[in-house]
Amino acid sequence: MSKISTVYDAVITAMGVLFPSVDGWTRIPNPYDVALNDDNFLRKGWGVRIGPSERADLELCNFSTIRTMSVVISREIFNTGSNDTQFDDIGKQLLEDIYSVQARFYEPDELLVEVSVVKIDPTSTSGVESVNGDKLNFLSIEASFDFTIRELI
Image 1: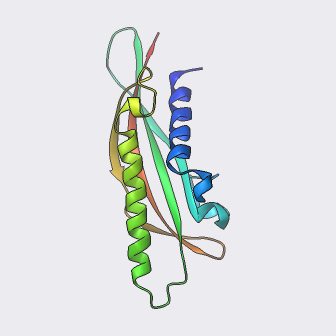
Image 2 (image 1 turned 135 degrees about the vertical axis):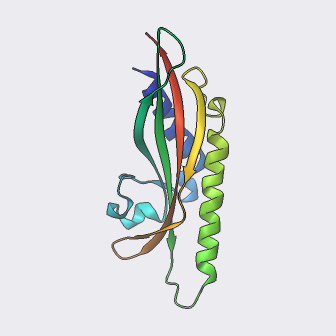
Image 3 (image 1 turned 180 degrees about the vertical axis):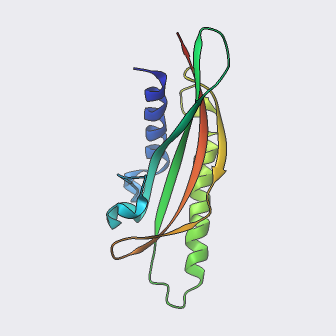
């Protein structure tokens, strides 16, 4: 098994710790198209999206790559009617959620993959976006990270 599998497993484990099911969180089965998931997964959901990679020049006799992974967080927004503070509240909760992910992923040793990862760079964070489910509405946010991974050849 390559180091990328170890890194991916560590990211999934870290997300499960940050957003445990005992607190009502669920893992989004299809993080690539959030709206296609059942509403039950989006109420308080998280997912990991695998992005592109590129070669990294680090050292001779090492295969190095930079792999992008994104974390998606979603929360249900209830019938808003004339309640404008609900958007503020859910938006702030999503900002806090994604901040906790960024703080956790800031250093490779926080994910317990320091042997596999040279560095983790937070690259971008989306704005809060609307996701229309089957019957309910949700807001989501996404943060991307570049994982620089080195393997001996």
